[in-house]
Length: 154
Ligand code: CO
Image 1 (cartoon, rainbow, N blue to C red):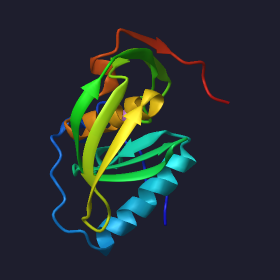
Image 2 (image 1 turned 45 degrees about the vertical axis):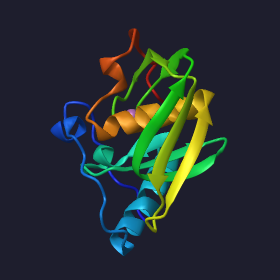
Image 3 (image 1 turned 60 degrees about the vertical axis):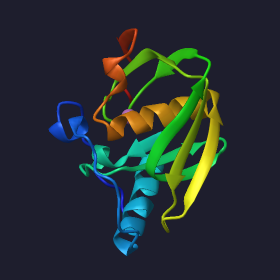
Image 4 (image 1 turned 180 degrees about the vertical axis):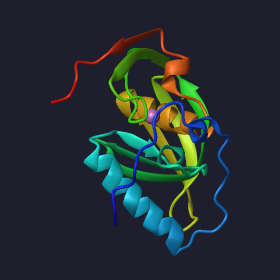
């Protein structure tokens, strides 16, 4: 496994409409393993493939509820609303206030191509919405009510 380079806002790959995965092979598994290592190395809650330069519909999410690999994910329903802080590994040094659904249901495939459903609430739902937006070339900064600078890291 290896930690991949995370591209920053301004890179056109972050604005692409990503392509679905059709082949669930060892190349995909390697990518997923690298994305897990990368999101953990960066202390992120999630990472989408375009963030490491690949315009394909692959996301990992690392939250209290568990570690998820979502391939070709689709949100099928949403409920309620939450307003809270959000950041992105591709927008270093910033945070914003973003309105999201409080609950989402999604369908996705696992690394073997098997279909699954998930229900996410609260921060998990926020992470699902944020990461799936990446697959459509959207960043949270597009929809943030406020955007502010974080203090510099040591
Ligand atoms: Co992000």
